[in-house]
Length: 256
Image 1 (spheres, helix red, strand yellow):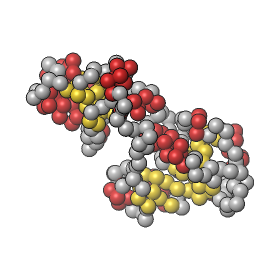
Image 2 (cartoon, one colour; image 1 turned 180 degrees about the horizontal axis):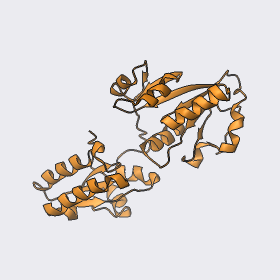
Image 3 (cartoon, rainbow, N blue to C red; image 1 turned 30 degrees about the horizontal axis):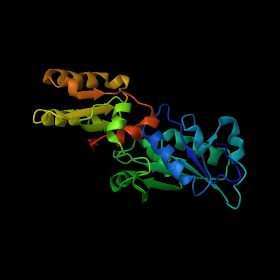
């Protein structure tokens, strides 16, 4: 999808080094926003269908969009904010900077300094808003029910994904303590001791610094005798995630 500078009133900055939950959220939010107004993505990781502003095209952001005095620069990470501040304050581009935060922890001094330079703030929950220390509009994450819904033929979809046709309980996301992967495993082990027809499905990347955590979880599963009922899929393509959700009986979000 090509982007037109004059028609683009918002830029979604997307400068993460790897595909993550932030990227996934951005792709889906931008897809919805594009039904109503001109928005494009600036950054290395993005669904090409979203309309991507390449680095050599950034000069097109100097002229104002049609009928508006400025564009919105929508940041979700520190590096997104840094670039927005540079474009607005150093290169004098007609931008207003918006930062969305889902974080529920104290921000470091550098992040607080960047947040103070934003023109507006969005938080995905009241808890996230409390950590911003500045007024923020709370807009919770949404769910696109056109994509995320029970499958019409769950058995057939499970066969296509090479999953058993039993009670499936899923936990998707990075394997790390704050995501609660170990809590999910402990809960599933307790259930498996009570019933035979339940399997656990896990997807998600194990980063280098979490390999020890992951090994500890797997060792616990091996020692339990239920390893054949845990299905570890690793990191799956983003386009496949809705299908995995569709064929679960229960999805668990055990984040701490």
